[in-house]
Amino acid sequence: MYYSNIIMCFLTISLLLNLDNKCNYIVTGSQKWSTTDIRAKVFNNGDTILYADSDSLWQRANLKKLPAWCYSKDGRRVLYNSYVVSDNRSICPEGYRIPTNRDWALLLNENGGPNLAPSRFLNTGRDSCSEFSIYPTDSRSVNGSYEFEGCAVFWSSTMVNSRYSYIFMAEDLTLTSQTPDGTGCAIRLIKRN
Image 1 (spheres, rainbow, N blue to C red):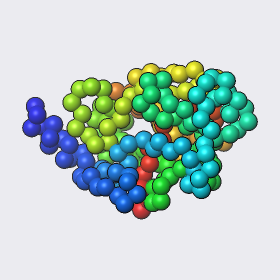
Image 2: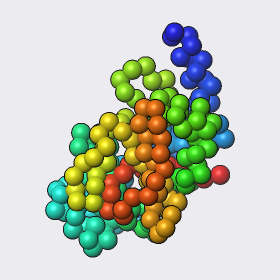
Image 3: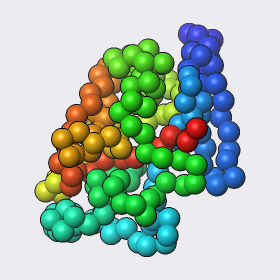
Image 4: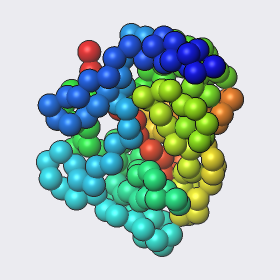
């Protein structure tokens, strides 16, 4: 069993590198993805992103369409509203961008498809050999409550019907959908070609 997990790791992930800007990425298939969610609290120009730690602050930021972040309920992840995703000041380190729906689909398809790939990436406490390890936590609704506990929810930079898409990942399922702009989701980055 241990030997087969090692082989699976090498098939899934080709390389782990440390970049000068302190971002780690993996090569999986034809893509280079960050190994962790972004945890930026400021935009690239130095402007602070509003920390909305209470339900009322989260609601207020969304009503005013202000970029905001918060921690997930368990404190493991940083969640952002879509106003951070759309802000031209950007939170992405140089050489990175927020992935599109197409990027996510390619990642999943190159790693067993949308129903198998999540089990390789989600770190549920069992053996996880992937450097792309994703800790399932939750997301935050527009009103500030936490939802989708035990799942991973990421922003996509793809807009559909004037809303940004998100990727919902559970242990054996992946969905792509649209969500209200004030929803709090994590952000994983992809390296620009």
